[in-house]
Image (tube, rainbow over all chains, first blue to last red; front, side):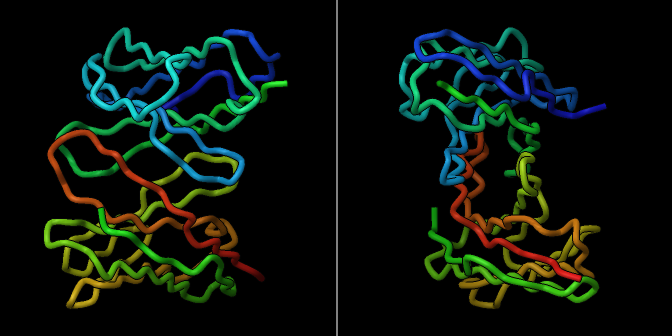
Length: 113
Length: 112
């Protein structure tokens, strides 16, 4: 079983569209994250949720809206997609109040045309 | 969080030990050293972490100098599958959710 799974793996869409990426973890962790890796391969945190509560929001445009229906799921919805949103988006999870051992998903490659 | 400096790239022959250095001269007393790696097209993978003692697990060993200003990740018998970008991260344990900041890392190429 995959510990942290994301869907879809690839997403190609037009500018202006709205899209969602889904993430699920079966590790029983309390905390989930979204990271973005741009074309220069810099990996930056976007959001973090703990038990469905938003605890980290790193100055991400409000076109990006994370949603956590339960602590095992964290979805990312992006409105009005722009060319600059093209990147690889990684979901991750960790046990809360444990050190920085994050478990990452395999990523979603988003291409905005 | 303390800044880290890593060489941009390194080569290692398969079967040999790969020693990846990291400089963190401004590290604070409560900051841990973490190592992650990212194999092409995959999500980052946790390798090991430590505070001041040397650490070893099934993947690697972490050697931290006595003054804690630098550390070395050792892959004892590198294989082709260890070809990846290796990230050294320094972060205090805050008891709250992580804001791990990944730098540019070291691209390790393992060759035959």
